[in-house]
Length: 232
Image (cartoon, rainbow, N blue to C red; front, side, top):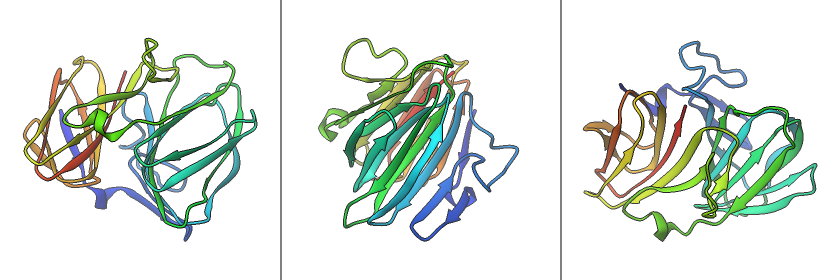
């Protein structure tokens, strides 16, 4: 099954400093048909104005992955972690027993990012945070795994859930293939460019929910960037 969820159909909230689109029910947006996808609970498409951001706030027992599309986000948390994550790079936060964090756009330009929450397989563990740079050339023409529940010591960021977060950069006409299990759930978004997923066309920033497929072929109609989560 492949379900295209047009960008215009997503939940929306504009707070001035934050223009957010919600792929799943979040905050004041509620749709009983969009409570999550497998263990993927949140996928927010956020635009954060310059010199603004999320003030300190708490989380617990959730894996939170931030994929920065443009600009940069600066993180600080109650564990003493601090770091700046720039466009194309990723940060992960395992909220565990509880963590308070702030995310600010300290840049002179708007920052755009995907904020993705995945339910953990293990609860009540010590919280943690990690960040890594991923050169865009490493995912040119195919998928690169950015975060995984099984990082295998290859530098991939670790998350405490049976899931993989991947990205690909494709030129128009290029194809990338993702192999998976028929019992798993995938969610894809192309922040840039039109794509086809197993022959079904999607527009930029549409949500694409997939399950029951073992081979997912993504074809770029335009030059495109794709972010994918494969979860239980």
